[in-house]
Image (cartoon, rainbow, N blue to C red; front, side):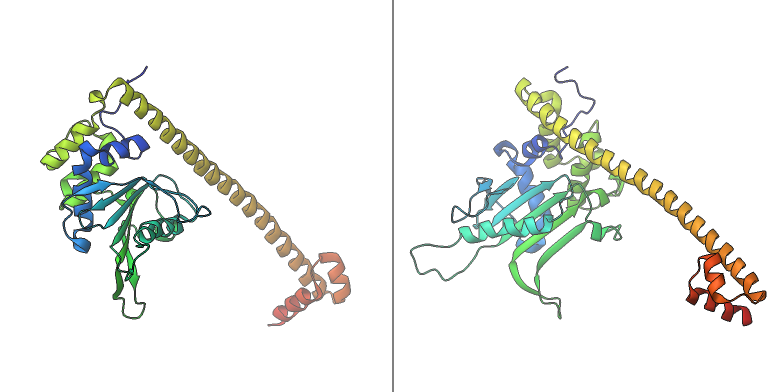
Length: 309
């Protein structure tokens, strides 16, 4: 029935849930606080954000269209792209770099003597998966990327920043959270699993978030929109889980088959080697041993040499 949920709070990894928490004017204060905690070392405090159109077209018709989850500008003209990525994408890093080119190119001043000065561009990717190349780094869930000199590791250009958050790696329990940023990570990771506001999160900004996220306070239309978004998310997740399980089962079956085949091959080689040794002891010629064992001339020669060692 419409509106009957087991969860008390929305799932932030649904399109509707993410936009409700971070993409609407009444909840803009949540996005400002999250970005301030995420980026304060890079660019200081954001005082005000303006939502921009999240679908951007290139300068010419042939350019591909870019669609961001959220696209914002602060009071200094700096641009922020915030992306929620639920599934692995082969060229996702390429995609984020491509997206960053749109806010850069938009700054070109046409019809004037522009000196090419640019405002900073920040791309934030909240990932519901782990990059394959990062799986071995179990504790590292945040990646801060800038253009740097390879030899000195010093930042060469500080106006282009990419932040990747691998959410599945963040597993701190609520009683071990030590920073405001960690509290944000915990909420994004666990919001739909909670049935109340933990005491450790009793701050005004988080109380507002829980209020915005409480499904019981949705209108009928909002509930329907969330239901549709949640169904899409669950269908996608089930498809991915099924594909993963089938891949694991297939791998196990293939492994067993390969193991049996390898075992049989090794057994046959051992038997052929034993026959070759017996025939060598009887003084049989190599040509005859090749015929009866299936071993190559070189293999029989090697057996003969090892027999004499």
